[in-house]
Length: 177
Image (cartoon, rainbow, N blue to C red):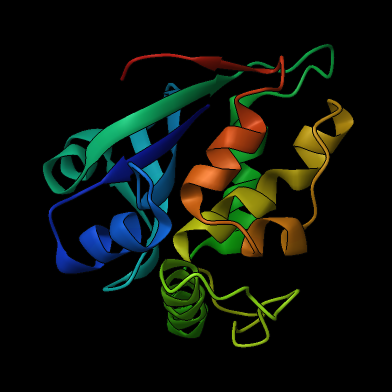
């Protein structure tokens, strides 16, 4: 399983990069070890919600900026288990547009050098998912391996902040995709 951080030239992606002073604006998961499926990418997109696409289609829409390969340390978890967990928890959920509005608002506050008065995203919908929240469905696999975070930890982060958090963990290795 490979965690992907990407961007594009779309207006929303440019605004996120500008507002957060970062090089990426999107998050997705590449399942690259599923014999029956080939290389497939799981993501949440504004136009389709949580969806699964071939890697080639993802690359047509996005430029991959960072990639971290996840290697379980002693848990014996398989990529198939992670994929089934994703399907069970995330498939067909809608995109959380309110959470992205919150991200935009906090980005604007950041640019205006106004401290963020919020300790949590009260705008997000518990049933809907924006791109960064896709990673939360793997929390129990990561936790068994010593990588601890809660859904609330993730919803308060932009994609690059989550990358910066995970790149320091020994279970993740930088790679090129």
